[in-house]
Amino acid sequence: MTIQMPQLPYAPNALEPIISEQTINFHYGKHLQNYVNTLNNLIKGTELEGKSVEEIVKIAPEGPVFNNAGQVLNHTLYFTQFKSPVSENVPQGKIAEAINAFFGDFETFKKEFTQAAVSLFGSGWAWLSQDQNGKLVITKEANGSNPLHSGSIL
Image (cartoon, rainbow, N blue to C red; front, top):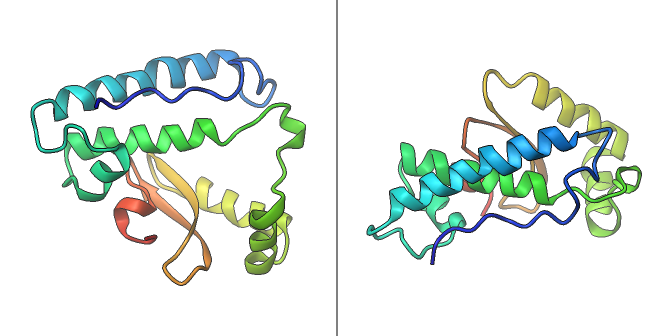
């Protein structure tokens, strides 16, 4: 089994004007594709071949395999979270209830999440995840890291 490119659940121009088709084509079509290709080349013939990207992220030591696996997972989660039309992108159901329970309301969550993202030094990601105790937490991870790798989630 090789790592595959995720399928976008929307057309490349569906997120405009928030995210342009040009940005989607560059970051999804070129950037992410390069991470997928590089990861597949790095794991070919190793004990990691045939594992899911999540498994690789959990067990790979720091270095090229982890960096590419982390970026494949991070970009996949990033691109597949959106839906169109963008005006409807407001949490609903259990996630909305959890955000309200842990942050008070969606606006407070957005402010805290935005602050985490803009205060991240260099390249990296801001994350909303659930810790081992079930609490929603906002974390910052450098480069290709994420809460799955850092152990801040199960």
